[in-house]
Length: 274
Image (cartoon, rainbow, N blue to C red; front, top):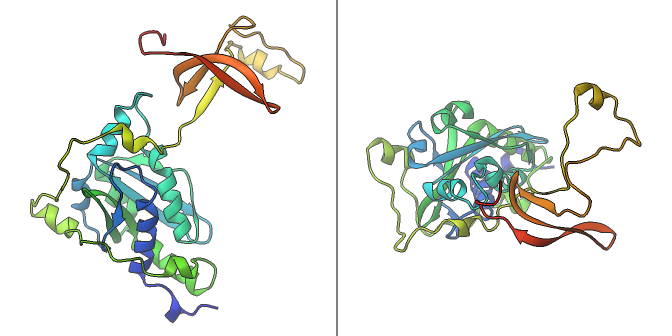
């Protein structure tokens, strides 16, 4: 059994979680975790959006990810409409939770000025470096202490996870101190900022809709096996393909290896979506 003395250092745990986020977070440029540092009330001023997630399992607590204007703008200007930041960063927060030997609940988007209060006390922030500081992971120290205690008890955190990650090529500035002093953060990007490219790996909910109808509460309560509902669409009409609730295409329902599928027959533009 792992002893307390053998437990991974809190900074090592923060670095491992940040590495997991860096490899998963949507970004045009590859991200790498920098050096963990104490968080402050000024840290959110460097970013344009934030999402938090509560942990469940062997380690309880909370994680937060702060993202830059690139990702926020890409999500709001997506061809599929305004996409949810929390959903876009959920895989990254899931990966961070897994690196701590636990799991994450559903992420939620929060206002930047509420992040520090939501973290609930002293926290550690790990900048994620791309073409400048593209994002950051924020972890309450109490969460890191819980992960270290779980590792000491031998209930979570594998030896590979606990090992210190490779050093970042350059250290980020002390975020809180730099922002509090009015010092701008470095951005080494020389070309135009690209948007949609960073969303290529974002998972989206895709739904095929055959039709709709309206029922009264009485009719809903009367539903039973065998009830047939008449939809507002004639037999043989194309089905709608919805992405995050937005109509983007229509097609024919087909059967593929005993599963239903959709053969696309029409791509719907904004003008004809209605």
